Amino acid sequence: MLWEAKNRELEFRKRSGELVDRAETERTIFERATAERDRWIGWVARATAQIATEAEVDPTKLHAVLHRLVRDHLTELAATPLNSLLRD
Figure 1 (cartoon, rainbow, N blue to C red):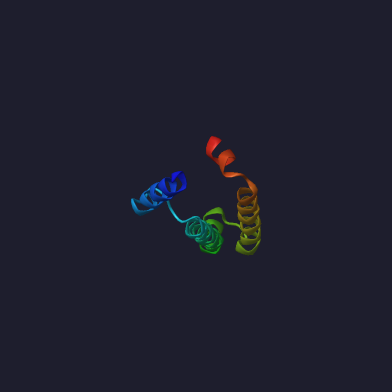
Figure 2: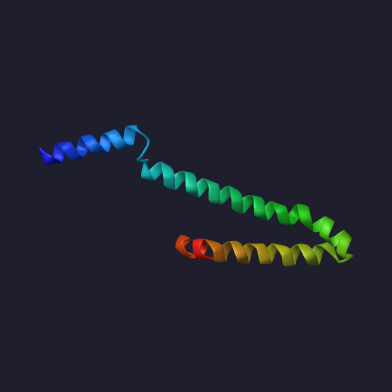
């Protein structure tokens, strides 16, 4: 009887939107992180020309440096536990 009551409570919480599907949530988070990573990598290509012009530097060298720095930072972020990111 206790088991049935707990199942009814869980079903109610799921239907009311209090609980979410774990697999769907993980998929959504993964897709968001992938999209953000791709946009940062794309930003390097878009920003290089503008920065190179304003700083009067070689755009090829600048692109290589920016690309490496952004990738390194994204790799570091991916390896950092979420609770550590929230404390900073």
